[in-house]
Every structure is written in C-alpha cells, then in structure tokens.
Image (cartoon, rainbow, N blue to C red; front, top):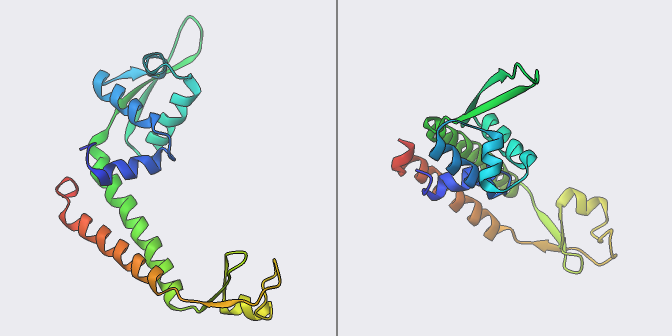
Length: 173
C-alpha cells in the first residue's frame, strides 16, 4: 500500500515534503507500538522532528497514541501506534480536495482573460491590467495578452487523471 504512487504523494503532502515521515511510518509498522523517543533513537534524528511528523500523521488520523504518566517523574509519555487502515479514506479525501481545488482553478482560468509582462513574467487578470492601464506596474512595459489554453488543458488532464485514479486504483476501493 505504501508503494502506491498516489499514496506516496498524499503522504508526502501530509509530511509537507519531509521525507523522514516515511521512515517514521516504517518504524511504526515494524514495531507496531512505540514511543517517540524510540523512533528518534532508531532514526538518529532529533526528538522534535519525530514529534512534528507524528503530529502530522495524527492530524491525518494515520496514527493514534496512548498517554501515560510516569509516576517517578510526573511527566506524561506517549506511545504511538499506526492506524494505517484509515489510509484509503485519507487518500480519497485528500484527492477529492485536490480535485475541487483544481476545478476551482480551471473555472477561474476559463472565466477570465489574462495579460502578462514578458519582462517581469507576471500575469494579470483583465481587470487588473485595466487598472494598470495595460502597463506593467513593475517595469512600465506594455502588457501582452496571455493565452492560457495550455494551462486549461493541463488542469483538465490533471482532473481527469485524478478522477480515474479514484475510480480505478485498487487500493482505494
């Protein structure tokens, strides 16, 4: 399941690009139930890095924890355990959110006319370009009409791909 590219992409987004998150998952899967200290020691990383990743996994509902109080120190300790059986649901949810975002972008692209400054490489909506008198506010160059048909095509393809993945990916059934 963790080898599925769609799952990896969703997890990568959950970890906000921190690839150590995959190592944390591996340790959790190997040990089943473990403390954040044990994970940090096994991976050779700082405890706060492991905690940050565990909190992200917890927010996504892919791990759970048990809290207990150490009678000697009066400190709370946490034991973490993977709950990856929820992963298909999490992936579906994240992909559906992504599809909605892409559909909003697509609608915006289809419903607007754009201009750009070739010098500054900045794009403006028609309304913004009008406000600036069709001159770039950065350099003063005349704005040129921007053809966003390729962007529209790319967005449509991404949406189609993601919808097909949701429909056909055996992991998500």
